[in-house]
Image 1 (cartoon, one colour):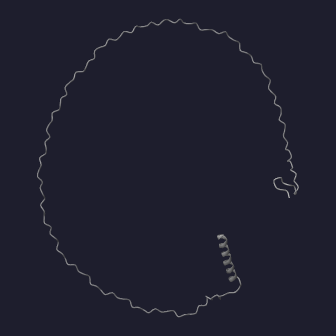
Image 2 (cartoon, rainbow, N blue to C red; image 1 turned 90 degrees about the horizontal axis):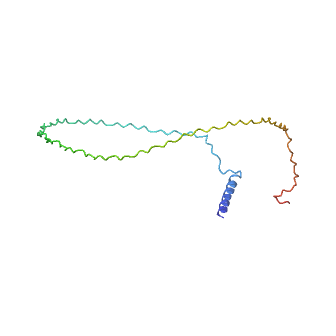
Image 3 (tube, rainbow, N blue to C red; image 1 turned 45 degrees about the vertical axis):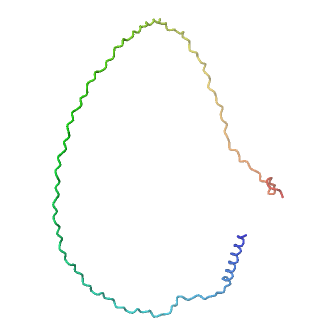
Amino acid sequence: MACYKVSSFIMILLFVTLVSTGSGKRFAEPRNLLEVPDLPKPTLPEIPKPTLPVIPKPTLPELPKPIIPEIPKPTLPEVPKPEVPVVPKPTIPEIPKPTLPEVPKPEIPVVQKPEVPELPKPTFPEIPKPELPTLPKPEVPKVPEVHELPKPTIPELPKDFPIPSLPHP
């Protein structure tokens, strides 16, 4: 409902605007801006330039150089170098190597290998190679040539033909 009121308000404003500007009447004459009357140009009075007074440069009094008294360098007392006492190297006593008692090796009885008799290689009888019969070459039939077929023509339906999906009048 609010949208309807806004659009009607805009329509009223548009109507009032068109009526007030479109009647052909002019409410104000245009100004001729090209004709400007000659007016005297204003003149500015000449103002004298101000002169600055000359200020003398200040002179600084000379100060005497300060005298720095010499300070004697402090002397450090000599410290004797510390002596490191000599420590004798420790001696490591020799430990005798432990000896392991000898363990007698057990005797393993040697098993004699039995002799395996050699078997003669078998001989196979020669079998003659089978002869395969030769087959005649198969003849492939010729492929028939394909001619271009004429395009089928679709008959046109009459204009008043009813379409099943639409209701018929």
